[in-house]
Length: 244
Image (tube, rainbow, N blue to C red; front, side, top):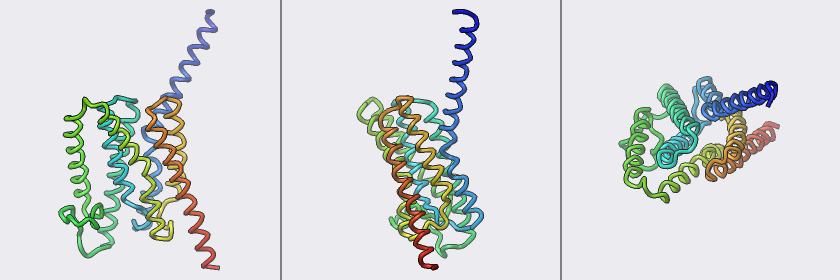
């Protein structure tokens, strides 16, 4: 190989490495980006009714499980880092929601984690209760994983559960919109970014030959994202008809 050919091959490898690094960075931080417009919307309106905090619940469970799945089956470190970033993002969203709800005095009764009635689960007024719940869940997962780590069936089941929860990411928001008969207070930008991100990461999973659970999860998420965008069109059209 002559010097010119060697330099061209080296440039090509450098370009591919740079693209790979950019793709990995997008995977790590891209999942958190959609929540920036929703975060700003809640700050602006001082209202949390349009955003389902159960989205945070689903993502926290999914990413905690994914971390333990990584311990049992070490796939790309990029996806492990993505889970850490998502957990921190969800805690930031919950902290804001608690602050806004308490500032508005939405309820005269402060619901706490010590109230074991199911209707108040994940509707607490104090941020520390969410932290405590997640800590308890993490400890439980750690104990079970430690006992069953040698079981390949358990590890694969753990991965499937993590991705099943992640696939249901948009479902709480879909149900909340249906219950409210409105998408008011929900950031449409968030859902558009969900859709773009899910398309990107599903393509990433396929190209990088990640475990099948990952691209199946991504495909389900895309379908739910599209359903929420259809809700935006439907409820906005319904509102225009009533105003007319």
